[in-house]
Every structure is written in structure tokens, then in C-alpha cells.
Image 1 (cartoon, rainbow, N blue to C red):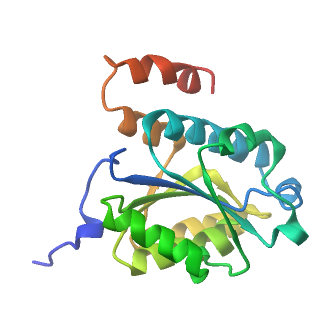
Image 2: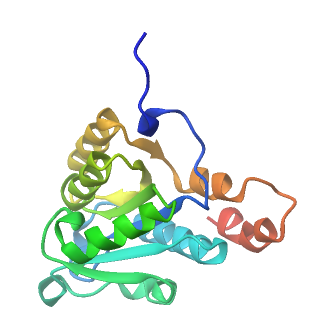
Length: 195
């Protein structure tokens, strides 16, 4: 019988182990993304929930001099985030991003939950780097986007076959919350109900 690696064992997402990674939701790229309104709305819901629940947020910007900064709709949600510029498609190719992720993993935050654009390029390459380090990875399907739907689909399928869990925004929110009888659930209920 083949044993499962730690990264492939079934598990629920835990907010005390999670890091939310937001990849390249930028001004000049966003208008070209298929279904960008839903991607941005779900990204904002997750970022607001992460802030309320104490989940660290990493936000990357790919060559902001050319692609602009993170879209205006997410600016309010950026306050607790650590903003990291990059030029490599895989974010961990940047030493500052690698060091930040290593520090978080060593502190017990070894479950990276990733969203952003483009699914088949920067999201995929960053996710593959995370998996190669032995950390857990969940990709938020309804908060990822590409210019073409076929590219998004291919990126998601490749990541799933590499060991990433495919999740939705609501799955993440409910797994982080764990229980309805908490102040956090009541605080975050509008993010669930009003979606």
C-alpha cells in the first residue's frame, strides 16, 4: 500500500496554519482577465476574513512599473497585507518572498492558500514552488483567473494533479471559521450571505 505524504493527506484548512497568498491582481492586467469581477470580489472577501481571523496575507505585484499596482477595489483590504514586488513569474524566485514564506512555515504557517492571476502562469509557478518545498497548498478556484478560460482550466488541472487542493471561497471561509457559535462567525456572516 502506498503511503500518502503529509501534503497529500486529507485535511481541513486551519486558520492558525494558513497564509493567504494573493498573486498579481493588478490595474493593467485585471481588465483582460475572464470573469475578473468574481475573482476580485472573492479575493476581497477572503482578504477581509483573513484580517479578521489573524491569517497572514501576502500580496505580490508583478513588475508594478509596467502592470500597475493592486486594483483599487482591493486597496482597503491591503492594510494588513505584506506587499511584495516581483519580476519572476514564480513568486518564490524573489529572495524576499522566499524568505517571508520560509519564516511563516517555520512558525507553523505551512498551509498556503493561493489566489490571483494568471492561473496558468504566476499562480501556477508560485504554487509549484510552494509544493516543491513540502508545504500544503490550496488553490481557490473561484478567486483565480486567466485571460482565457481554457488556460485557467489547464492551470487548475495541472496543480490538482501536482497535489494542490482545489477549493472555493466559501470552503475556505467555513473551514477557517469551524463553528457557527462564535463572534467571528457573526462578524463574517455578511461576507458569506451577501456573496
